[in-house]
Image (cartoon, rainbow, N blue to C red; front, side, top):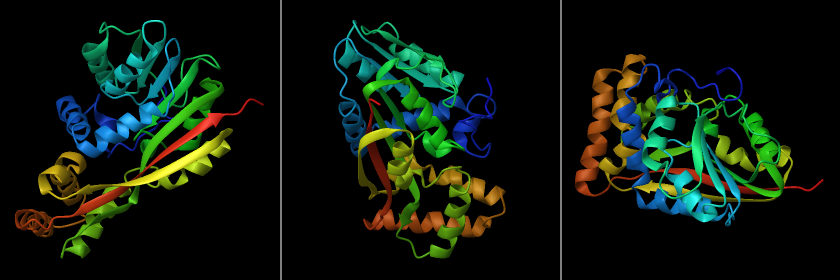
Length: 279
C-alpha cells in the first residue's frame, strides 16, 4: 500500500503507528471512549441520518475505525444494499470485521488508502468521513476521490475538527500554548474543519451545508478520554517542548479545577454535507 498518496499521516501522531509501533488496544479503547460520550453519539447519529441512505442503496465510510458507523449504515440499507468501511489500518479493519461482519446486514471492510479507493466511479449513493481528513496531507484529494465514487445526486458527509479552536481554562496558559501547539503541529490538516465548504465545493459538490458545534468538557476525566491529555503531555516532554515540572503543573491545574467543579475545555467541530452535481 502506497502511504505517500492522499493519506500520509505524520509518524508522531497516534493513529499513524497503530499497525507498526502503537498499542492497538489503546487506540481501540480510545475510539470506544469517544463514541460513548453524549455529544459524539449525537453527532454520529446526525451524520449518518444526513447521508439519506435507504433500503437497497450503497454507502461508504472512509476511515471507518472499528466500524460502528458502518454497521449503522448497514441497518439503513438492509440486506438488499451494502455498507462498506475502509481504513488504512489493518488492525482497525480486523476489529471492524470481528465486531460486525455477519450481523444481519450486507457489507464489509477492507484496507485502503483514502487517496486511492478501490471502487469504480459512481459506486455509492453516499460517502462519509469522520476525523480522518485532519490526518491527511491533502484533504482535498481525498474528498475528490470520494466524490468520484458518488452517483449523480449522491451525498457526501464530512465531520472534522478545527484544532486551532481548542481551549482550556487554566492559569497555566503559557504551558498550555506550548503543549498544544506541539500537539496540533503534528496534524497535517489541523484546521480542515473551517475549510470543509471550500473543499467540498472544489470537489464538484453543490447544495453544501456546514454546521459548527462545540464539544465541551466539564470534567478532567471526560477530557482525558477524548483528548488523551496525559499521553500528549508526555509526548511534549519527550520532544523538549515543556519540562517535566511544567507539564505536571499544567495537568495538576486541570485536575484541581475539575475537583472544584470549574473545569472547562472545548473544541469546535464542523459537519459538512454536499451533493454530487449531475453535470
